[in-house]
Image 1 (cartoon, rainbow, N blue to C red):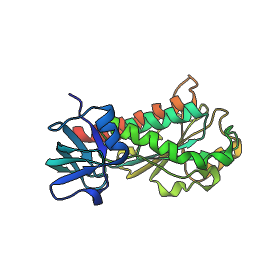
Image 2: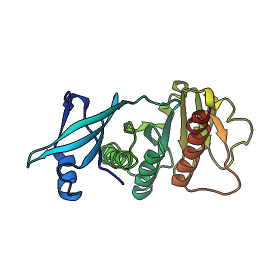
Image 3: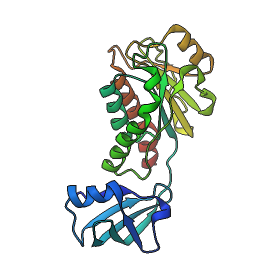
Length: 243
């Protein structure tokens, strides 16, 4: 059975009860038609995940009683997607599905061939975060995925990551995935619909970004973002659990 799942700030969580208000209240009461006695799961996006039971419902808030709680810890490696801004529906799709798979952060990137209105990109971050938050709830993540402010491609600090990848159609299929399980932070960048400029590729590779090629097929930007994230997730998190 699927139970409601919300993120509530740790400061709003009491010793044995939690108050649910705002948009979460509306969703719980008017969309899900929840009743007293129903189970609700909550993450504080910091330290704990809670199993709770609704004990009171009124117009301003829902009160839930904490039945169980467990410690949550951020997994390593952290995976950060640098996504060159693509068309509206494609960008929202990337954010939603990457969040569901488990990416830790998404940084919108402005590159030369980005066709979106670059002046308006910063104003879209709030909407993108809401889309990501919805996907975090749907997939019951322990922690939210964060959507950061946009960066120019030449401002990316590749040295912030143990490994950084450039998947593209002319990349090299060598041993560039070697050592991936020992990394604590992995970044990767996906180009826009028109691909990267030669100067952009040179900038990234000169700073030790690793190029990678998927195969003979040419993928759309949104497909490439999700495809490579799935590979990283399998090679790092899932296989680590098997040990």
